[in-house]
Length: 201
Ligand SMILES: Nc1ncnc2c1ncn2[C@@H]1O[C@H](COP(=O)(O)OP(=O)(O)O)[C@@H](O)[C@H]1O
Ligand SMILES: Cc1cn([C@H]2C[C@H](O)[C@@H](COP(=O)(O)OP(=O)(O)O)O2)c(=O)[nH]c1=O
Image 1: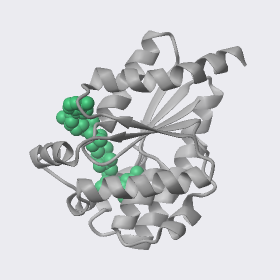
Image 2 (image 1 turned 90 degrees about the vertical axis):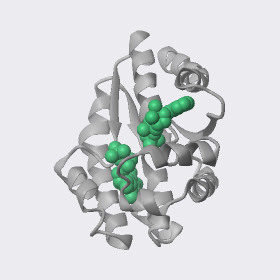
Image 3 (image 1 turned 180 degrees about the vertical axis):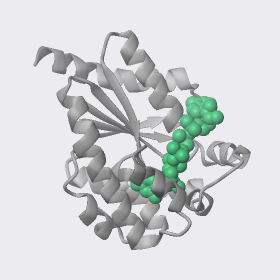
């Protein structure tokens, strides 16, 4: 089963993806935790080069990294019986490349052939809470510094509506007033029936 954790910078994706991995492993599942940009040479290059690669070129390069991610890492892990959890996926492009002035349909055209996740979780929180966390960060990348939490939340909502029309399975998780354990539990509540179905199949 392929699961995606999405949401604006600072909402808690990395924290929650890690907790969810622990909780699922504790229950005896094999879990492969991954993230985008990838930890491959291309992904690392993109993390370092975000200041000089921008707009359409960045959208294409991120889509190339994602394509390799699916082919070389996600599908092999799924074939080996793992639950795969990705911290960021297509939605991040539908939001961040738009912040970088690329049109939504163009971004989608570069991503439309990727593997469709079993379910995508969109973490949302109060923009002031997210903003306070970002202020506490020592270093922000160019796109992190450009995208404001309100704008990112609005673009994530538009990505959600767009992908719903492509029949993607998506769920919004409201993190307001919830600690990370409670957020992970809310995700597991949605996952449990899907996992039971997987076991029965
Ligand atoms: N539900 C939560 N409640 C309180 N703090 C949280 C919550 N989720 C994450 N955090 C904290 O917010 C910060 C940003 O989380 P992080 O997982 O790095 O976000 P992202 O990967 O979305 O940028 C971290 O310091 C983390 O401990
Ligand atoms: C996945 C993804 C990342 N990015 C950019 C946004 C960030 O500035 C940068 C790194 O992502 P980020 O999630 O901040 O990485 P980490 O917290 O693991 O260092 O990559 C895109 O522009 N589009 C995408 O689709």
